[in-house]
Every structure is written in C-alpha cells, then in structure tokens.
Length: 478
Image (cartoon, rainbow, N blue to C red; front, side, top):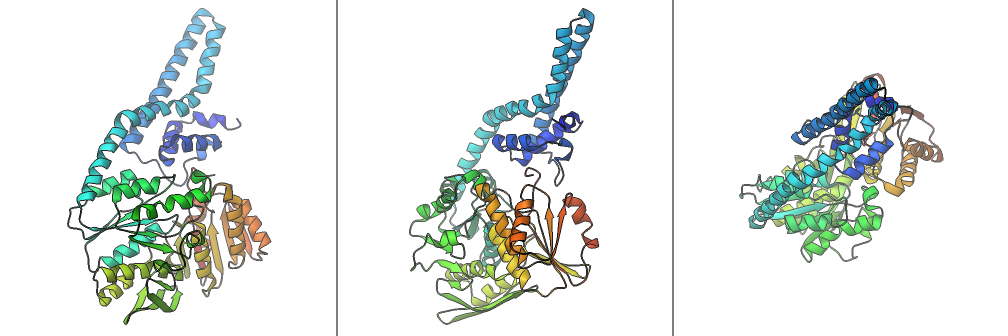
C-alpha cells in the first residue's frame, strides 16, 4: 500500500487503458499485471497508449466512472455537513479512497459488453468471409508455425519466391484468426503463392488457423519455452504446433531438426527435415558467416547454387534451403533463386548490424527465444572485437522454466562476453547466477532505467567494440 497514492494521479485512467491494451484486452493477463504493479507513475515506460477507437471508448468509460464516483462523493460530503451525519461523511471518504479500484475493475464491464455485443459478432462475420476468400483462392498456400523463427522464415520465403512468382504474405504479427482474416480482405486473386504465419498461445490454435488458411504445405521452424506461461507444459506446446501435421496429412511439411523438440517427433527417414546442412536432397557445403552476411554452396542432382545472403548466422541456412527447395519445385530458375537469396538482408531488429561510433551494433531486440539467444551468442563469439558487449533484459513467458532458462543463458553469456548489461527486472538475478556459475570474469552492469541507458549508448561503447542487443521487455512484465 506504500504507493497506493499514485493511483490518484491524473493519468491513472490512461494507465489503466494502457495496461488493458498492452495485455491485448485479455482480462486475466490484465488483472495479473494490475496485481504486480506498485507505483503507477512508472507503468508507461517503453511504449505509449495507441488511441484506437476501442482504447478511446474505454478511456471515456474510465473517466465516466471516475467523474460519477467523485460527483457522488461530493454530494455525500455536502449532505453529511448539512445533516451532521458522520456515517455519510465516512461513506464519502471510502468512495474517494476506492475510486481507483472502481476504475481498474469496473472498466472490465464495458469491455465485456462491447466484446459480446459489438466485437464478437463482427469478428465471426469477418472470419467467415475470409474463409470463403481463402477457399476460393487458387494459390499455393504455405503455413509457417513454431515457437520462434516464423517471421524470419516468412520474410525469407517471400524474398526468394517473389523473384519468380507473385507472393502475398501476412504482414507483421497478423497471425491470429482475426489478423489473418483482415489480411485475406487484401488479396486480389492473382497471387500464385500465399504465406501464412500461424501464431499459437493455446491448445487448438494451430488447428483452428489451419482450418481457416487451408495450407497445401507447412513449415515448423522450431519449438521452445515461448508462451509456456499460457501452455503450462512444454508437451502441450509441442502438441499444439504439431496440430499442423494432423491437418497437412501426407502433404509437404518441413521440420527444423536443429530444434531438439522438433527432432524428437520426426522419423529417421524423413526427407523433409531441414538444418544448416540442407533439406530434401539439397546439400550445403563451404558455409561461412560474418558481419557482412553468410555464404554457402547448395547442390542437388546436378544443380549447384553459389549463395550469398545478407543474413547473419549459420542458423539461417536451414530455412533458406527450404525456400530453395520450394522455389525449385514451383519452377524458379537457379539464377532467380540465387538472386532471391542475395536479396535477403537482416530484418528490422533481428540480427540487424549497423556502424555506431566506430563500433558494430547488432540489434536483435525482436528476438524473444532461447534458441535465438544461443545463435546470437555463437555469432558474437566468432567475431573479432576490442570488447564483446552483450545487452539483454532476459526473456518473457517462460512459465515454470523461467529460472532454468535464464541461468542457462547466463552460463552461455559467460563464455562469450567481456561486458554484460542486464536490465533490472524479475529475471536479472537468475541471469547473474548463471554468469557466476559460468565463471564470468568480465564486467557486469545492471541498469534500472533501460530507456536512459539506450539513449546514452554512445557514451558506453568505444571504437572496435561489437555490441549485441537481444530481446525486449514490455511494460506488462516486471
């Protein structure tokens, strides 16, 4: 109760709607965030409230609740003074004190009503319309699923396949029933290939998304502890992602065996597995990666590709060979495929390098998985640098594996970095413990204000340094 008074800040209603929006209007997640929060002056740090119609209406409702309570409080106070009624005065004070709680919990009512009366009927209609559009569309439909690597896979496929075919793909994180349904409205019917990214947070999500998108082909990019807080057990995560296999049946389904949880679910004779050594008869040799990109040679049945990609890290080769195999199967020439691979460059905030005051800064802040951490650290380890600096807040949504995952990350960092910068939060101590057990001998800095640190990063790095920044930590995690 030490900071209860911060709930009386003028911006408190805005903070409440920001928390709802940041929780994607999932009441359970919102209530957990609300329960974790102490000082409401410090809730909005990394982002700002997006004033969508929904957020604006809810904010108006929050202010209505607040004004109604304050009006009633004033009326009761006036009457208590006129009538010398202590009980009425006490009631007025109680109303004033609990007014922030009334906003925080009362706002759930208009949210629920709006969802049932307006949002859900509209969404059902939109999804039904999208299902018809997709059913009638003649394009080859490719579904990309997995705990991590979906966006990278989708971007690589689009970049390579679009050299010979008209391709459409779900933008950003439009990987839910509603997001994909919105995307379907943009299709004009002339696309030859459509790439769908399918997201998962609960059991049956992939099944439902497959029924909407009706994929002819699938790719499993990998499985790990991401979203474990909602799945609870890793077995449920694996089962959910492999729901695509139940839908695809005997159709083409590529599986990344560099992910141990995927590898355990495939047969030894499965030709549609992929890793940095190739897939489906394509064999990779002479692979090299550095700050300028990745080169390799791929061969299959007399066909040879001399490939150069702007992407950093050998871990990308597997999904590139999948794109090669698909491109070859739909009729792209070798020169078109090579040109497509050459056009693949680091995606925004995903192993994206840039010069920074004489240093190299590698921005991997959109990475949010343990495999990505390992791949980034392996890449950093092989680079020449005056100092190797690693910056991270840690990972979110690791469920009951949180401590185990972050201690392991700490041990991995200890073998690579000269300087480690951690952003203070609930997993910082776990990473620090991993650093200690890994006998880290460099410099450790724990930062309380991430935004201030990043704003002054130029004062921290020196010429010849290589800085790897991995992962992001949104305000709804502390």
